Amino acid sequence: MARRLPHKDVVIVGVGWAGSIIAQELTDAGLEVAGIERGPWRDAATDYPPTYNQDELRYRIRHELFLRPDQTTFTFRNKMNQTALPIRTWGAFMPPNGVGGGGVHWNAETWRFLPSDFILRTHLTERYGADFLPPDMTIQDWDITYDELEPHYDRFEYLCGTSGTAGNLRGTIQDGGNPFEGPRSRPYPTPAQAQPFSHALFAKAARDLGYKPFPQPSGNLSQPYLNPLGVRLGPCTYCGFCEWFGCGNYSKASPQTTILPVLMRKSNFTLRDNSEVTHINVDKAGQQATGVTFVDTSGEEWEQPADIVILSAYTIFNVQILLLSGIGKPYDPVANEGVIGRNFTHQTISDVTGFFDNTKFNFNPFIASGAIGMCIDEFNGDNFDHGPHGFVGGGYVGQVQTNGRPIETTPVPPGTPRWGAEWKSAVRDNYLSTVKPGTGTHGSFYSYRDIYLDLDPNYRDRFNRPLVRMTIDFHENELKQNAFLTDRFAEIIQAMGAKAVMKEYRKGPYDITKYQTTHLCGGAIMGTDPKTSAINRYLQSWDVPNLFVVGANAFPQNAGYNPTDTVGALAYWSAAAIREKYLKNPGGLMHG
Image (cartoon, rainbow, N blue to C red; front, top):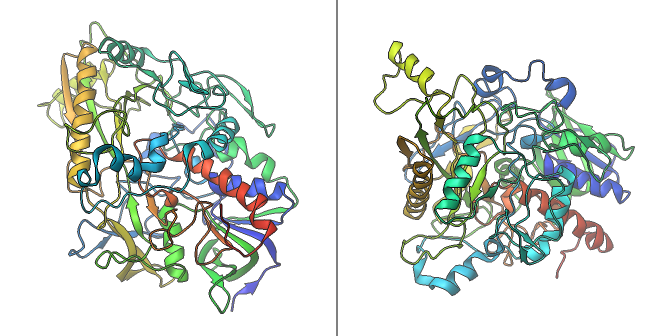
């Protein structure tokens, strides 16, 4: 029998970016809010001090900040006719764990989606015709526009102090910025980061080829910043330990460095860490959530009653809790019916390595940050004519090399032995004079009928609940897209003066052991129709109106950008709707 806690107005499951933002907004509205987080409390100053945070073995290789597969895992298969098996070590993505969620370890690449991304199916059908799209592609419009989301993008970027150069300011194209971005209402809060040599060289080569390079928008700050909540951030020191790591310098935007210092001091907010929510409780009619049940580290079960439930965990866990709680109809790919698990997506990335004359080039790759880089956007979204190429989608391309850490940064030319004296000599000769961005092409991943999440019939977790089963593979459209982007990227690296260029195309089948990104999206998507979406435009459950599911799970498909800026914007959008609409009519669906 679960022990019952005192009633709260709101309970939030998962206290990362989305959960922290909604907690801040709803406590400001005077509501009593409880946050529940599976992982431990994490503090910027004490958990990531610069005295030992730069430990590649501890954080990158041994994955200290991430969920361990022996805590919980997923099963994976490429095709529906295969038997899925449990993932025993993380590879293609890294599930976050702890207060701050993925906001602790992210690179801090802070991109807005294109206006056309939000009306994708309508846009592509009008431009190319319905027959141009693959018949099994299930992309759809978001039921929200860029213009509606723009003020909320702005709020998130000013919370973070994002460093960048505006490319479209209130409809006027600006020199030095991304000319393809949607109009922004004001400049970035801080100027773009200074660029190292290889990044600047990439920009020159791209410009010489006729492109319009611009600095990547960065949550690694270029200068000191005081955010609207009164929290101070410092300038990035270019240590090169951002992704996979926390930041004790307070120079990378994270919940710990932007919002939690204010939220945790509020008397109407409580946080329980090391507590895993097992399901959402609903009334007898199954139409209203009554709270959540969770288990602490001792194994004791607790019930947290609440009037509003916010599900804001990592994408795949939001979907899992909905499935285990019986909320929404599970997706059936054979019948093409149901919504929970539908339109699951990831990202399509690849890289190009450029080897340069070490007597002429010294790039010092260790001088870097997680979101450093110069990029081009000519081949993202529908910024170019796809007609001659036979695919849709795209991505940004750029020299975004974020580090020169010693364990993994060992680039050697093709044909070099994989060990021994010759390998060591090749590492020594090429370390300083090689460009290897890691994710130089960052492409979209569109949704398909046979890519989805459901509950595995064979494997269970420590609570005897079915594991989530991932069915995912690359389709021809994404592989064509990736080959096209990789070739364009290689042309720029060649124009930089590389003596040799090595292309690393993304190839099928989808490989769960090779890192892509941690950008898992979809599975509980937003839309206009309850038959094809789990939540409405305010991220409110169609079936249980006092439940809101906030995160990248809402994306009907994934665009060619990092998702965090859009997740933050959606969190502000949903919180505003709760404050301004839902609280005036509690328990009902919001419209308009």
